[in-house]
Length: 542
Ligand code: AHR
Image 1 (cartoon, helix red, strand yellow):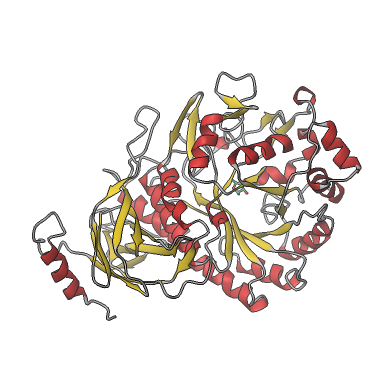
Image 2 (cartoon, protein in one colour; image 1 turned 45 degrees about the vertical axis):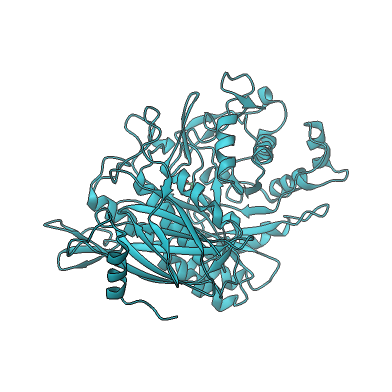
């Protein structure tokens, strides 16, 4: 199979009359060529890449998930039904809890037993509010059972004791007779829960204890010793990973901890992206902020690649997984809301960030085994927003919905030769503390317009998720599918009128997926017209 040249492709598209049914005006065609190596898939895209994170922060837990059994909001044992139903639709595979920064201040024994008797605490990180501990271990594990997902618990290394951490694991997983198992039974749960994922601290370089990597590595080794496998349950132990591009953290952890196989199975980097010197608002922004935020999202590819290189040096067999357990957009809070609650709106731009990042994680699935977007409800880049009994699905939610096809599918390697998205910078002054996360050439800010990932599911169907971040230009894509004979193609598209289009309680459907009819099968693959600022997910059957 030969690769179609750009000119051949344009001619093919014109002949097919694919674009608006008529010839294209000169200068309007952006083209891309894609090869999908359907004969070379070997890695599985772990469904936990589509994981979530729920912290005791603002209205993520209280109001967003937990309303209490006596609430008028329909609930099951205190957990709101609408949110559970929405998360089931996107097949939420795993939820990380209780933090975040909150985790290293959390004392789990305060969150068990009769709710009215549970002690309170001050949530010092997030608004200084009083935490009543009504949502604790039993409630979280009930949430996971209602969702049909795996729990991922983050233990307290920063301010908790080893004994406390050891007791927690015994409480949740020991089946026999023991002080902690008996306490669990006294609190109404006879059988232990299955618990696979357990993190030993969160951001211990910062809110989790301001530790150096050397100090944390030693502490990690000590604490994890007492995180035991009880009653046939096997714990996958996760160490705190670096902040963004802190490569030294990874180097030290790999050197000091990964040298003994049983000590850590996962390392958890965090990376958030925001805007630079423009508007930090989630909805009131212009194209420079779009460019900046998406450029900053795309940086994750380089960051991930450099951490992987370090890990490969110490662990070429990839025994230690990357568990990217916090990532997403971080904008200004919505006007009038508590700054400590991190409540932000979510627009088409956030959907783009999700689409780009999830494609990158898919493509790195040989090392990335879990990722948890921050956060599930009402905080940062949320799936859903709630207001009392009301709930709205965000544009990011719909990316998760469209990408469910990649869960546990086999990654198919791709090669993309795509156009650049160029934004005229004008007189903007880009000097400042952070360099722009994009190339500047001839007064234009430039980013690759597209990214992609492809997979084959268990029934043999191929799915391709394509992101076109260019807000002005559609892209004509010519794809070859090596090692397969596509017969039928269909798809869905997520786009909207404006770069800042978003869903509100009053207008909940401004951004939602629609059927996509812009793709056709060719002799060697398919051609597709990807609208400006869109995410398209195609399904190809042979
Ligand atoms: O997700 C919000 C906060 O961001 C988390 O609590 C912390 O781990 C990170 O800094």
